[in-house]
Length: 373
Image 1 (cartoon, rainbow, N blue to C red):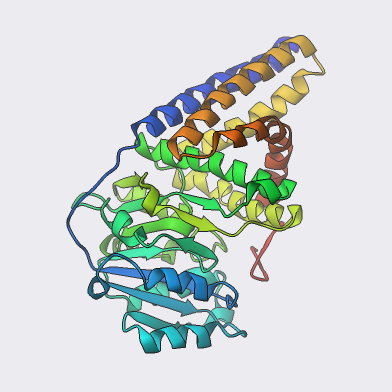
Image 2: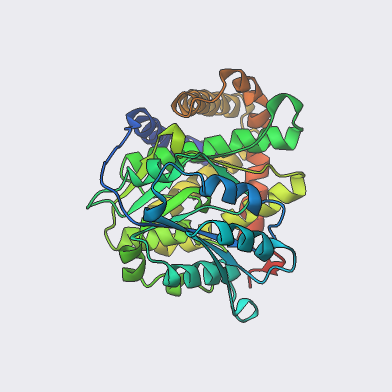
């Protein structure tokens, strides 16, 4: 029995190391793709009570280097009760390519965001659908940089996003979120670069409208509260779509930091809720995520069996992760001084990760006042 309790963490550690190697190799590729072809683009943003954020985002979107004749901005106002619609209307009066869409049927659907995006995409005229969130901020070269990654055989482009954390004046939860978010994106980017389409985040995501229509839009996943990004990617993958990651700095997006541990737990639990659906959508991604969970739990149990062996396994895990995080920081040009937070992240992340995984599987989260049934 003792042998079994030590064998499980050892086997899962070997699997974990294999995937870390894959991610690191993918990150080191980090090709800067540039295709001079121009496409018509529809930037689509679902907005529900975003009066504090939408002006900032729209300012960035109407000042893009991409020709205004080649892109439109559709703000899907999802039954906001604040001044979101009024702010968008002011932009639309000045900029011919800004469109306000007042979404209908919010109370009749399980996933309001997918409903808003679906209606906006049906209205759109672009060949490329480019999405971000209302509380995000993009560079003036964002559209140009993302579109440059498309070609005839590329169907989806995933971009990098980070939190707007001001490191030296930020709280512990903000620092943890920034660090952990970068680590997560390393998995996203590294996997995609090696042809493994594991995950993506809707804060910076683009895809061909033609492929979106081919997979049936959100029809097959409309009953899920979350997953307008990762689950859509899996539908694309099943149709043989090609996905690439944009490593160009000018394509990076920025999102607002959370303000509390409860807020972060709720967000990550919502993201983790998609884990259970990956068994059907992407079995390998499901296996990888579960191997990470099993590794953490089995090492903790191993300390009760043989603390020396468990400590050695923990040391190996820490060493592998350190080398991986360094690669992530190098790839995305993150200030190396932030690596000093690694020991704190290492202490918090396993427990926090387990909590979010559990909470996500039993749907202990809310999103815009909604809960997943």
